[in-house]
Image 1 (cartoon, rainbow, N blue to C red):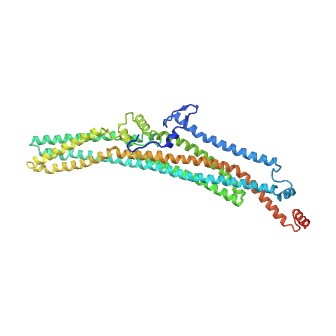
Image 2: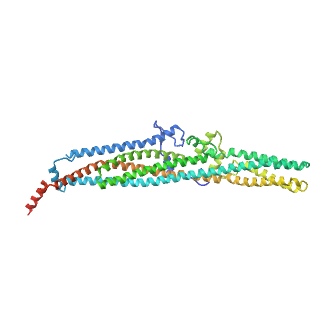
Length: 490
């Protein structure tokens, strides 16, 4: 499993992989990553549906709390706060009176809402961090894919350039060289041997792209989900599609986080300003945020479990998917995924044969230069053209050997795994934590906000009544009682 650079599944991947998988028939299924299997999809859908039960539970808690609150108020004889005014005025001045109780209730409701808002703000901070981690991980994947695509494109370019150069040498300079050596059969035999060896090198190099189809093999499983990609530049197309999807995913979560943050801030503003209408509007938005929090939790939990199933053994999934898609054993792909530094790699025999043929061609051309140029000076230009093409071909061949080594592509593959299974997995888990905390905090807010409307409304109505009574030039009944109590005390 990418042993060369030491990728191992993280603790979070192993923990999430241990979560039981249950399908719609409540039968336990294997935890093997099979995204195209309907039974595996059922387990993820059932896991996502648990967030729906959480939303239903939040709704029942909110309704039960509000019903209990209303029933308790009615049992205490204060259904709407419209009891006898004189009794309210008498009780308001007593330390245990109704006015003091109302103030204590308003204080409890306010601080309960503030506590829920603080928890929600902490959850939003966790959400921003998790969204950033997931974004970093997926961009690491796309960067590794782009680097691998550049390596594969360089391999294809070197092979095509080398083949074109050798074909040019076979068709033009070697033909002229053979014509120049017409009287000397021994020199013509050397030239024809050089031609045959060059054609063999062309044949061997032309077969390499059939084996080095790593781009199409890595993208074979993604072709069915990402709109179908052609074999040419498949890895680069996958990288572009992942960047496109990640940009929208990141923006969606940023908007969700900003919505939750604005709801929390406006709730605090409504409590500070005692603005009943603002709290009512924010209660509606709190319901929206609650639904979105539980919905995002369902998506994130399914993504975390599926990601853990892939990351626990990614090599096996890619090899099996490639074998099913291509119908053959993916020897080249396995060489680059594992990179066990086996000297007998899938290209070792072809490359060694090409190297020997190029060395023989070089030796034969050197022999012709020493033995034939003095006798056939007109062949000098054609011979030098062939040697120049051969030198360029050998330079391209050495670069090709270096690029075909598993170290470079395996590093890109391992970096992609680390970005997806370390940073990406951690980011998704932090987003799950954000969704849970925000859902719980919005549940608490929706329990405390409706009582806050009532207390704020009663306080504003009492304030208006006190202003009306203060305009009475003769004073109110309460003021008369206080005056008589003051005289008796004298």
